[in-house]
Amino acid sequence: MAAARSSQGTAGVNGVKGRERSGGSGRFGGSVRAVGRALHLPVTGAARGIRKATHAHGAGESGLGKLIELHAVNGAGDVMITVALASTVFFSVPTDEARGRVALYLAITMAPFTLLAPVIGPLLDRLPHGRRAAMAAAMLARALLALIISGAVAAGGIELYPAALGVLVASKAYGVVRSAVVPRLLPPRFSLVKANSRVTLGGLLATGVAAPIGAGLQTIGPGWPLYGAFVIFIAGTFLSFSLPPKVDSAKGEDVALLAADAEHLRGPHRSSTGRRPGLRTVGPAVTHALGANAALRCLSGFLIFFLAFLLREHPLAGESAAVSLGIVGVAAGAGNALGTAVGAWLKSRAPEVIIVTVVAMALGAAITAAIFFGAFLVASLAAVAGFAQALAKLSLDALIQRDVPELVRTSAFARSETLLQVAWVLGGAIGIALPLNGVLGLVVGAAIVALGWLATVRGLLASARRGGAAKPRVA
Image (cartoon, helix red, strand yellow):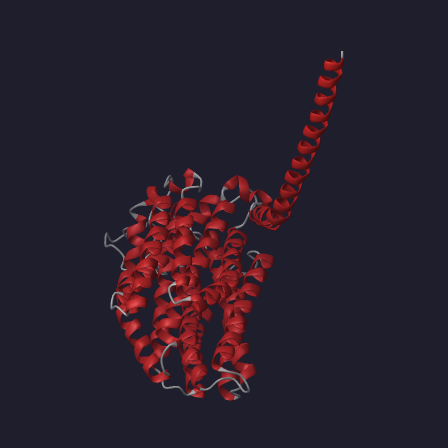
């Protein structure tokens, strides 16, 4: 019995000790899990919040939410590469040498792109069943090219320029395919303008978040933003295949012909005379709107390049060159975001009148800034130009949805986006070629907008008075 008591006592002591050890281990494990949850919550909470916002109002079920997320990834990766190239080509050398470098960059990258851009849309039209693969390829290509550029930045190699051209072409190819994909992912009772607004806003927000991150990585080393771009674009490659399979379907689609010539409205390929039209047929209201948008996109490219050098040489009063460029960049981004938000609110109300109005606003801002040249007016012009470009593009989308038959609507989006990219390149070339005279430059900018506005205002207002042109018929 003594032995039993001894054994029982020993067991009791050991049992208590075991429970004490188990309880201590449990409390420690619980503390670790609590700390883990506390650290994990901001990330998972933010991710859930983003997913809830992008998938709202049926966007999750239709697949539009995934496209919004993909476009955000695209914007973040592009801005990482932009930060790296700007630091290498623009900020690292004196202004005169930087102008030469940027001119060389434009000659080697933008000039070939101008020739390639008109081919991108028609080429992708011929591959309608591989849109997800095309978007993934554009992401993967930029990921690999980012690594090539990082090596060129470190070694000063000439491969920087052809790699930058490849990034530009891949980025614009993604933009063309994305424009063609959006109509396929519209939720029920969801306008195309609202869908494009969400996609664009998602890209703008991601760009705003990624830009300072890229600048921070740049302080570590010139290649770090490019490594960040590589990771982002690899993620985008896999995310592209998460889009619904229906975006690859070309059922019920044909090729859009972009021309305002009424005799070509009866068929997408041939007129009644049997001749193939030289331009593509979508109707006069759309082509006038496209011309006005091209003027605004040309102004955007012009202001980016011209103000970059002007403010580096002649900063805003009391500010450094970097701060001056930052102020103008933030103003342009804020204007673009506001235009996107206003476009979603207006939906598709009177798109012709909206386009005429915002182009007139941009023209007035450019003329005012040229006459009373100053820091505040330059920043205001950037904001107004961003606002006008965003709102006019959404109005163009509304016109395409209204006037272009569904059979050719997807192709019309892709080809109009290609034309707008060419206009941006042309504006950038004009901006880099001008002398650094603020008044002269803004007069040229005003002339670009005036040319587009005067050429299209009459046709757009006539279309608005008729309540929209009759939809073109497709044979």
